[in-house]
Amino acid sequence: MPENSKSKGQQRNQSGEELDGKNDKIDQEEHRDERIEKLGQVTLDRNEEQQDIHLLSIIGEIEGHDNLSGNSKTTKYEHVLPQLAAIEDSRDIQGVLVILNTMGGDVEAGLAMAEMLASLSKPTVSLVLGGSHSIGVPIAVSTDYSYIVPTGTMVIHPVRMNGTVIGVPQTFDYFKSIQDRITGFVCRHCSIDRNRFEELMMETGVLTKDVGTILVGEEAVKYGIIDEVGGIDKAISKLHELITERNKISE
Image 1 (cartoon, rainbow, N blue to C red):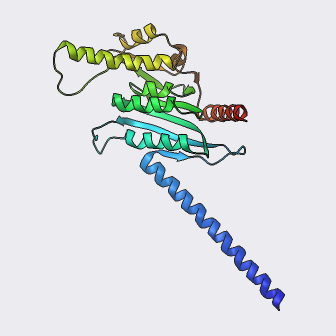
Image 2 (tube, one colour):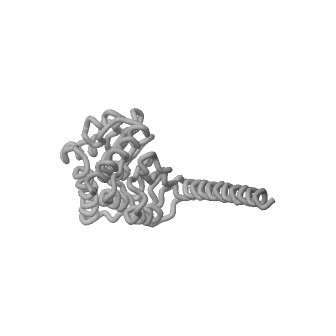
Image 3 (cartoon, one colour):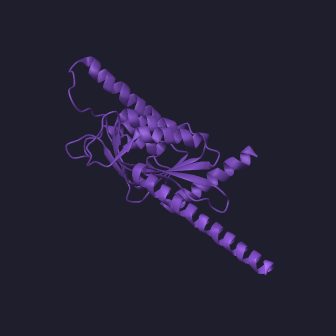
């Protein structure tokens, strides 16, 4: 009798542990879904080599100091910057995958994201899906390696400003200084020549009623802005490769 009782007790304990494990898994999945819904971010499950990858999505318009319409898809820089700081300080996360499908947005916020990504000590890879326009270009090139899908687009154009503009020389000097910051950052983090980048920016024969250039897939690679044409499979594979190389160096 005691032996039978012990065996039943062990069964109950085992069932309880299995139930707790299932509940923990459900809680983790709910937390993951909540992060995706609110922030567009998630940490992917570990692979066989125990490498944690954080997925950061830059979607819609990059929101700066002013709140955009509730009907707009936005990426808020006040969400992204603290998360990047947490990633840098994390012992578990070993790499960052940045997914971009953005129309651009606030210049200061976009440059802040790009600078922070560029200064991460952990391997980073970007993937342009749909488009990475305007201030999305510096973000796309800020990572260690970049990809664009064959149908992905990048729009390169001069800085624009909405609202009241004072018609004095100082205003145009300010525009020029902002433009130089963006151009300098892009050219430091990819292979395109500064003069060629500015030519693409000031092109008048590509965009209807506008100034600038649209690059599609392979064209972005040809000009040296993006490293390679590829999809999510190549991006994740490359990131794991960079993480492995970094771990070997640190050993």
